[in-house]
Image (cartoon, rainbow, N blue to C red; front, side, top):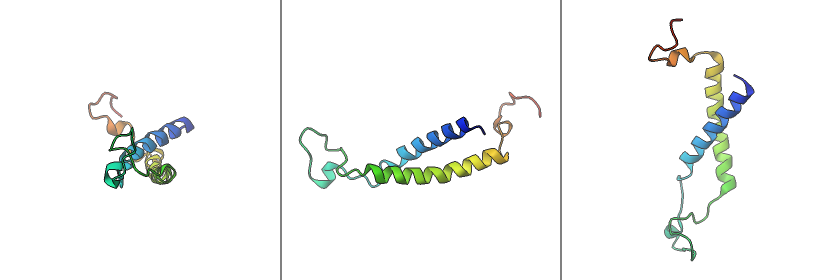
Length: 90
């Protein structure tokens, strides 16, 4: 795996984990009962960006290491994912 592939894989996993973790433990302004004028009631009340990014990055590093290890070791290759036989015989 080239360095560019590793970086792209990390970025894709990072954003996937981010979008999965964003709604977890989210408290809205409506839940808190303090809606700031000019904002929606569904806006986050006390969003901690730094904490969320650290958690997302920690989870991503673990997932990336596992996936990159599988790719580098060759346990699963592109030919294993060729369900329609378009790559020809081995």
